[in-house]
Length: 156
Image (cartoon, rainbow, N blue to C red; front, side):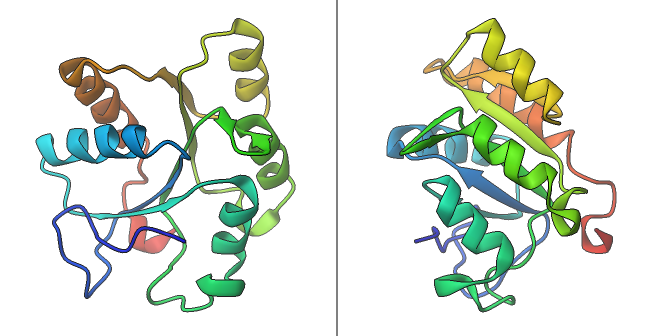
């Protein structure tokens, strides 16, 4: 199930911009959210753990039917290694979904294999960043990721 608290600690409303984070490691979710906090991010982060859950979120099915609570994200941040699938499989799927093609997808992964990075780029990933446990470096990565947000996310 998606994480329900926006980065400012509020859980009663959704604040734009909205990031959908595909990540199955709770420690990586923590580091990503901590970096956002260090940058003063005031938007909402929804977290899903795999490709099927991300698809359900985007399509508004299952437990994600409430579009006020689970609105269309303005940016998707995706890990490469997910449970039962990969980030590239997600990119392959979203690439063929007309309704979601305009949502930028950025990869944030522990995998540094050039072949995976190349395929992610060919499938439409806007950028690829390596995960790190160094909080300063992670914050710099997340700052670069936030630059991929649309100028006017409420219009996307």
